[in-house]
Image (cartoon, rainbow over all chains, first blue to last red):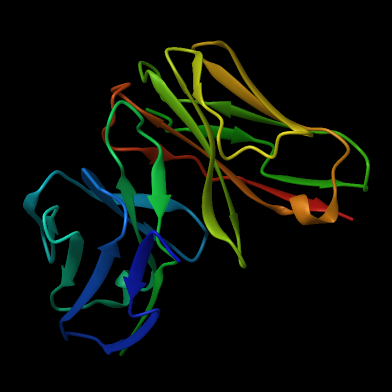
Length: 110
Length: 114
């Protein structure tokens, strides 16, 4: 099965509303990164997390290593938030490779 | 800071030909990663280097794929005898710290094998 499961796989939001995306890990994730892939295909790093929470503007993310999940909250969604959101986990040790989820495709409508 | 640079941005090859993809990491970054993205498989790890030394190539198809990092300013991914199933976007990323940290991705090379 998938080592990193993202949900939902797709989401449609009205501008100005809030949402939460989630990743569950079946590997021993030690750090998590969240990315947005914009319509041009560029992967933009949103957060790098050790266990705990981070906030940046309208985005807030949390990572719980004991319960093996991470969340990304989007507040007051804007049109430019549209794209595909990926979470990725590092399984620790000295190996920094990332294992990605399948992504959540977000569409924000006016 | 130009970010991670990848060339070419698009490449079309015929089945059986060789393809070489280039990556220039962010200056001062000590780790370089290669991933590929397809609709079916999603984003998959291929290989990575730490201070130019190969660390993990567990994601590389063994027979036709190879990667090198001859100096700190560039890495290459070579695919010999390309097959249609090699068609994908190949992404390079770099991070400042060799032990982990934020990975910054390049724009990718879209490879199409006819």
